[in-house]
Image 1 (tube, rainbow, N blue to C red):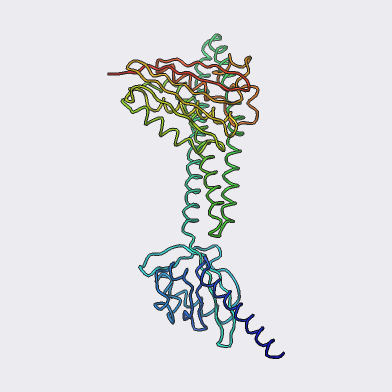
Image 2 (cartoon, one colour):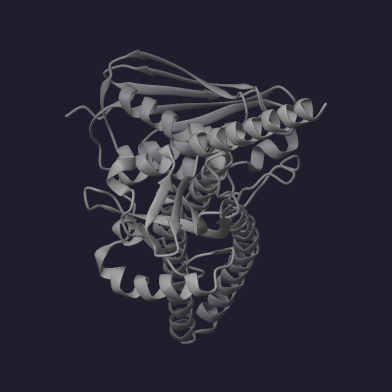
Length: 416
């Protein structure tokens, strides 16, 4: 009976050792074990791969081999101090930590330490995570935030400049009563527009910025390798939100340029089919789940158009089709090009435009009654009509509530 118990206990110990060995060998984090003197006594395959050394090259080497040389002197002091009173903890709180590969290159890491004892003495196990991808994502978020701040500053400067111009105009028109009356009327209109602008801007900016802040905060919580899919989901959410925010800002800036007469139609040679395909690829990030843009092109691929105006027109119409269509619906872009004209048709299967609202749809700041909570400034179609007119073309549409909307463009092909 004693022998059977002893054998059972030995088998249990063997299984535990095999499990620990498997965990050690197949861990997705680098694991480095050092002794009381700071010598490396064991490391797992992930650590060897991460640092570019073989196991034999690192055994009995000081842990400083894996640290950039410029930090070695200070690290020795930190290490000795830690080994005097070891405890489980993370390293580098509020500081960036770096490790060094065999080829001398450096990479950012997160490190946690856990001391333990065996019959052979005292040891410390270090768990090392390469956070290069996370740092890249954080930098992208910072860059996106910086770009938003820059665009906000430009927008504020434009509003301030417009306010100064309005004040100067009021002083000049005071020379006559009739001019004063006209100026006051204009001021009321501009103030109303400014109020609409402030109301729309404050609403349209708050939601995207809150989305960016939320996703950026959540990304910081996904620190494990297996969380990569979740991280990418939030990175994509940030990119899509920044694209929407940029388009809102572009709409406001376009209105300012149109009012000032600074927008001119400058046709240039372009490959319209390739241009449309590139634009649709860019807009995939805005599509809802299972939405598809079906593209059909007939006729000459080389045309003469103002490329930027054409981009703004198609972007506004396609983004509206995406926004006001449910997930899984299809959107159609059909283009027919000839030597004299370009005809484009954008058709969706969305909510449609109520009949009473159709007469106002190209008015500035107007939104149909069934637009609901969908983001929008009410400027997009006004800008589309202005650009089409500047290009010497026409835009019209047909729409039915519940079945969708089709916009039809006809533009001249300005061959030299």
